[in-house]
Length: 347
Image (cartoon, rainbow, N blue to C red; front, side, top):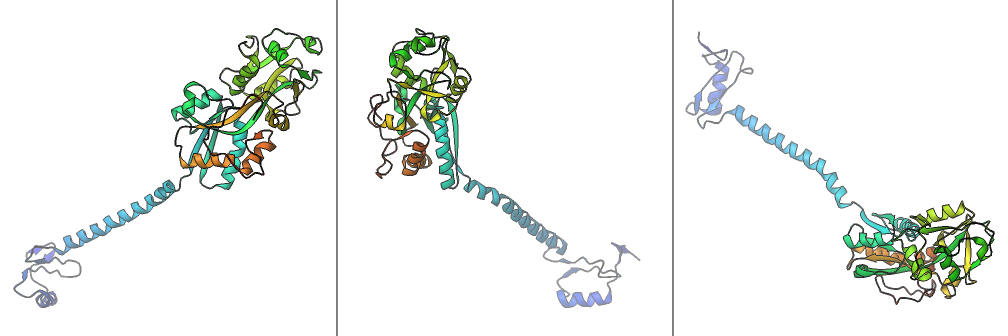
């Protein structure tokens, strides 16, 4: 007996009957039956299509679409996260503006969803360069724009007094502008020359490029130079720490950063305060500026507008700055408007 695939060449009677019924004698090209038809069936039609291949092809198509569906389901969350990723704004520059910008940024992020505001220091000049180059969307300055910085659009959000500070134990309470200039130029070197105890004066100043230093040089020093022997610090906080730990030191910083660790000294008989800045009697005043390139993004404009709003202006006033508009007036300057430059002491 010949065999094929373990099957008899003789068709099984029952399978032969079924094959004739289903396919007809003329269409059945070859019949192969097994002793057990369930275990071994292979039919080939005259069209040349084999059942096994058809089933495998169908299974392949199903598996292909299952894989596509799985890939789609895995990618969907990433697309969703990309669509809803929070917007980001970076502010860089003046360490005088920085602590107040951080307070406003926290308040803004509490009110507005899906926004992240990053605040970096570096000084006013660094802030202007960052805004010009696009490294930051907003440059923070505590002085007026200079040179090519004037291509930026400034928005003044407040005015600040520069406070002269000494150690709380220092009995000196008042200095005139000429005395301050002479102390920082090292023409006056002992506190006894200005009504204090006999001890050498230690001058503490800010680094070149600082907005606080720039305003101090413009208002106080003029063409004179700060002594090369001065202790140079790169932030208002560092100046405060040096003076707080040295009874012989004198320095300067933003009025809003004066605390009980140091003592503010009157200039020309006037102590720095919101009232004395507002009424122009205190002379060491400079603007707090947010500078952007022309046509900033919507997120930047919205944040700048927030900084000029009544709530933000009230926060800045509580922190020791002078608002740009009366808080109860309801009027707000437009973001980016170039305000007339005030004389020193006139906000």
